[in-house]
Length: 401
Image (cartoon, rainbow, N blue to C red; front, side):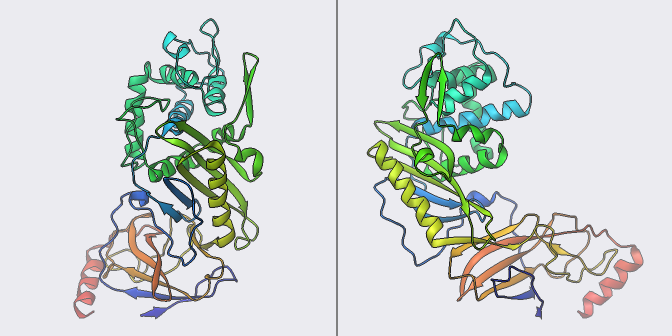
């Protein structure tokens, strides 16, 4: 066992050790298959909601949840997925913001909330995006779906394929609006995955979600997300309501982090099944305040930082640099960032070839005997296979090792 120094934020005192042991590596499945949940002795606030989740986007940790994987009718939260596919169509140049869209009779006669598009006019894609996001227009959502896929039914198939890619295992979509259907459902966790994906994958387009109102055809409608007015740190995301779903809200905010030298920290909350517009706003605010007041996030390692240089055999060099392919953040109660031990377990013996980004071990962060996080460690450099003499010599060394 070898002890190595670790360069971290000066506020964090951490011991580090590298454990060279036989180890079965992580599979390469998406990290969200099971969301890592923080273990803390700080109870979340009591919420009048059927399901909820609070998530730190930096560390990827869940801070609080209830009925995380229970299926619910998502109502207009569906439009987050609709927007994700529309944004993807913009990225791939299938659509442009200035492109005009022919409004079908189906879109024009859409039930529920509307932006009041006129079939005699040809609104632009950007107008329809604002109508869908700010005004929650069902008519705008259908018009955009038809522009992307030709029909709402085909677009719904694309929604389900995208859900699979995003690891949304408990969701199924049959329309683009969220109108009630027994086969149309999602969960708090899946909606969190979706919200996180749209923020991560489309940071420019995400800005539409903080617009407080939009005017079309001389009709001005406010954004139904009241937190945009109440809390200046909130910059999205989407409300939803049907009789069965109740009042729902996916919200997100960015506030300064003391542990991150004043850098901003993003939280995402999902609140499902409250009994009023006021309640979904209040409960979401409670959840966000709890996350910011009780917890903080700290960057433990930076992308590309070499945390160990263990021996490697049968390669063109004798050691290999190991580290992370992304910045590693940890979320904890604000007074729990001391006394953390980091242990790295790698496969033994390490054999060439290894390529940049290939998994080579797991870092475990532990405090007071409790595992805080397990993080895959990757090769930071390529090590090719040595020639026949080098391989032969290392084969002999391994026999005695």
